[in-house]
Image (cartoon, rainbow, N blue to C red):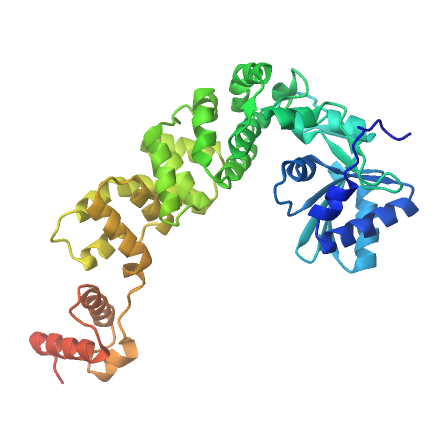
Length: 422
């Protein structure tokens, strides 16, 4: 039985907004689904972004049937690849640069709050009713003969027009507390408001994030770093009591927001830099606790630990007489992401300038001479080679050597002064 649909048909919108290549892949999917007597629907963020007029890069499809088998059938036909996730009845079809996620339309049951759901096949309306927010619970039928028909049983389009984030039921945040961070991301991304009852539920269940695994919380934070202005999400998270639930030492204020904005102005808005700034005010014990809480990778842990260690180091490079070589000696060995975070955090113009030059220029300076060249000048093999190369690098950094000939002259002078001239 076909689900109830709105009076609208968005066939013309789909043909206008989706590229010919996307429509071609979509057509191959719907034809194969028709032969299998299955129905296919655009769902989730794809529909939301289409209705908001935002760019849609990937396709999210719900299949009333076997999504994995359908994806494989289409892949065989068009010569693309498939990655299947049988536990959840999903598959990703990669057609050139286009990624298409196909998921079995399903119902979900959460065995306990915060646990991953148990899934069973379901109809499209059941699939929509399990989603996080009404604005993500809209579907567009792309099967024939009802191509473009809108399925909107939870009035998601009305909330899009009203610019509201609304959960589908009172237990939504209890079932999956990561939806709390998702709600705050959508609020910031689209400049929407939390519907009043949804906001009360969000604050009531913020503490439930304590029971969520580090991997899942970290994933939501990684999605936050991808936002245009992550600080807006974190400000709202602070006000809702969410940050303290992630880790008791976390807090957000206007200073932290300015640092995030400064990192973007520097062209250093990477996830690792944001993470280091996120943890910038924490003490060493709290940093260690956050690393464990979020199950951070070695590289991510290094970024926030190095940023913590650098806070005391950067003050040493502020003196006017500090040479570029001394800046390099102070900073080499630390993560470049940590240096970028310290640059975004400093209020000192001279430290900002020196950290910027280190990242963009000084750390890559190397002498033109190498070990073989030094041997040709009479330098014996051994530790003297490394020491002289380091002195040459410092000379180049401090403007004492510009050309290769300058370096040769310096080496000969050093050898004469040490009594090793050949």
